Amino acid sequence: MSQSNTTDIVAYMQSVGKQARAASRALAAANTGDKNSALMAIHEVLKNAKKAILAANKIDMDNGKNNDLDAALLDRLELNDARFDGMLQGLKDVAALPDPIGEVTDMTYQPSGIHLGKMRVPLGVVGMIYESRPNVTLEAASLALKSGNAIILRGGSEAFESNQAIAKCILEGLQKVGLSEHSVQVLQTTDRAAVGELITMTNYVDVIVPRGGKGLIERISRDARVPVIKHLDGNCHTFIDSDADADIAINVSVNAKTHRYGTCNTMETLLVDETVANELLPKIAEAIIAADDAMQLRLDEQSQTILNDNAILKGHLSAATAEDWDTEYLAPILAVKVVSGIDEAINHINTHGSHHTDVIITDNYTKSQRFIREVDSASVMINASSRFADGFEYGLGAEIGISTDKIHARGPVGLEGLTSQKWIVYGHGETRA
Image (tube, rainbow, N blue to C red; front, side):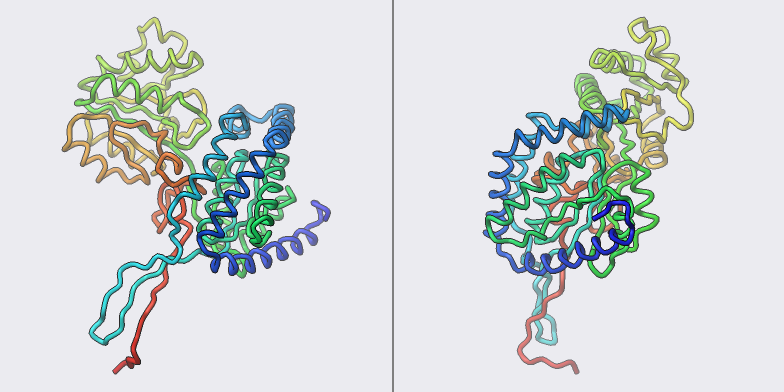
């Protein structure tokens, strides 16, 4: 197939969609043992193919560097030993999770005599469009299989070699246990026209999950005819309350910002209560700079007053602009603002945040409960790093993405987020009067 021929792309995508729909019906009928066997078969194939997968990833990394891919994308693209081991563990974790399919809840008797409830069922066919991270290929495939969904995966061109190497392992694992090879289809084209087809194939695709930069997700949200589960960006906040424990405030802030930059759950704005700012802000700022000397702090006026004469921070400070409060940097840049208290902090987060993950550091129970009730985000945390907003850390085994939508799936999307419910009714010949 020519990747530049749109007519061929249309035919190719229609074929992929038709095959996925057929596979989804077979998967919906598969039992838990069959699905777990497939996951463990893929695990075994993948483990034996480590050398080939890392070699493919090196090709992608070299191409990315030659094409001046930015540091955040290169970080997401790289597969090292630890990340490869994480992929293997993720397969085991998903296999160990309870199978949600077929679960019946809320059974009640009605006055008419019928007995009704809800049964959890797969969504059907999931289409996923994502950038950089080749480990997402495996995570998404494993979650889709366990939840009884067929999945069509379209990775970024920068990860093409890595994704195809992983796809080969998935296919071999599926074949070993007799599940349809079309249960997981990784598109073999980098033509952007394939994305346009995927997001409009309402007869074959039930939901689209975009995972990548803001531009990608805006395009998918604008053009898709298939329902979308998405988040646009991760402008995450940590608020240091007046009743914060100093050591926790420092340690959590350093981890939330410096653990990794290219992730959507990295802290981008630090808010500090004015009553403790003089004491705590210099300590937090110095600790963050000590963790990464490349860090730049964008300061509001009060933060400048407190930090500008600090010799340790010289060369790391600049004045914040209005744009900084709305920015997901994905880089060693942190916006810092001193606030008058929890009311201003909550208002700032709800106004400028992306409704992804926000944190309060406090020993005050009343204020912590206010924060988690009133901050309108998919994940709200007390005394913990925003970096925990992740499917693996939440015990989901893996995640297909993080949703900031207010639909059935919000926050990290695991097995349950890839299911729906249908009403089931048991009768004994009842008729409606």
